Image (cartoon, rainbow, N blue to C red; front, side, top):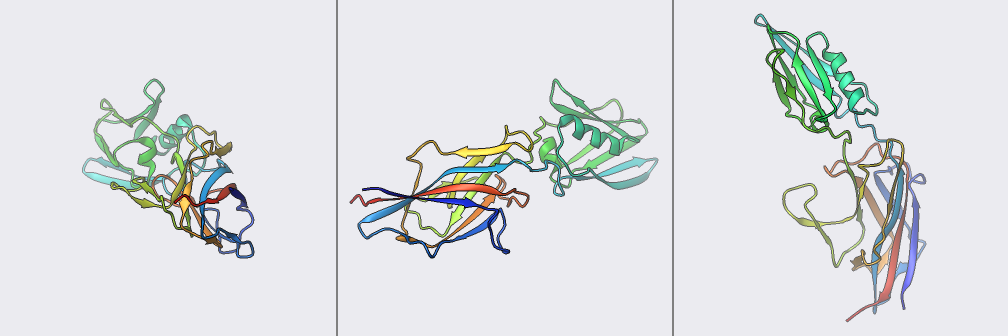
Length: 258
């Protein structure tokens, strides 16, 4: 005999110490348990949230701009207003910040930005010290020697990140997952779902539905009273600007196979 119990979770309903990216679920009044001859498994069957993430925010909206002319060096920190940008509006925002000394021009056929000095009597250095270089796919430091020598960005990726990763603690896993998502070596992980948002339009709905009923984690727990849910991106960064979400966790109790 197989028994199911669905946990329908709405992150809007949380305590003052919980957040959308670090959410604690306490269910002591409900006996979610299995007997000695039974085993429990877990799977996330669906997840929904709104794609409200600004691709330019306070982690990637600044760069240093330095002009060396006649032996005199002048530097300034340039700040791009926070918001949702496409390739054209981002290029325009950068160009307007450096317009007196340099140009930034989007090349549609290449999906790259052409950075170019406006003068031949100066050298320009740009230091992308924030995470802007990840979107531009460019070296952190570039030099524009003259107006005849362009420096190109890499292929632009206007998503600050592409994936939502859901981790759950408070469970003991027999078949614990193995991951190298955030480092170069494979390690045991409490990662339970990876959700792709790369093709979701800004302010659209990020929707994940688990279609494979065999994609489940076998638990060592005989009883579950608390779960902690953390949601990060593929760089291991907590999604502090994550909107409210809904999630369904299915707990399956079945006869233990000896």
